[in-house]
Amino acid sequence: MAGIMFQDITTLLLDPQAFKDTVDMFVERYKDKNISVVAGIEARGFIFGPPIALATGAKFVPLRKPKKLPGEVISEEYILEYGRDCLQMHVGAVKAGERALVVDDLIATGGTLCAAMNLLERVGAHVVECACVIELPDLKGRERLNGKPLYVLVESH
Image (cartoon, rainbow, N blue to C red; front, side):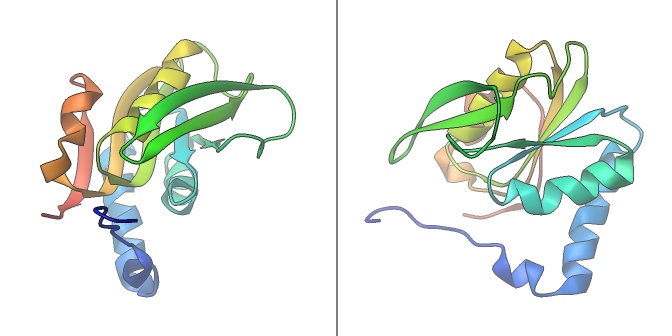
């Protein structure tokens, strides 16, 4: 797509020690924060979210693109740098008062993370933080998070 530079985590995943170290850094940060829900954004949030959830004793909740989840869902539409999209979550997957961590591989403009937080907050969850491997700070996505904490491992300019 013209004008859009994509960052990729494939080389990280091809190195088992680097992948383990990445997950371990997230686990170390969240193990004592009483997180009850790790919400992973499709698709690369599904790579990092489950091992973080398992290691911290939280459940993993997938936030998916439309028409991918069976059963009743709630939806949150959002604007991307190159169009519109939507995230969905199973009704009842997250309860009011639960402490949630949102996980994705990258934050660019922040639209997807905002949609994920909105979805969780609409059902009464408290979003403790968003966690990404990579941040593209030049796109100012952090500013769109309305002061919600964001933890990243790498900034890419």
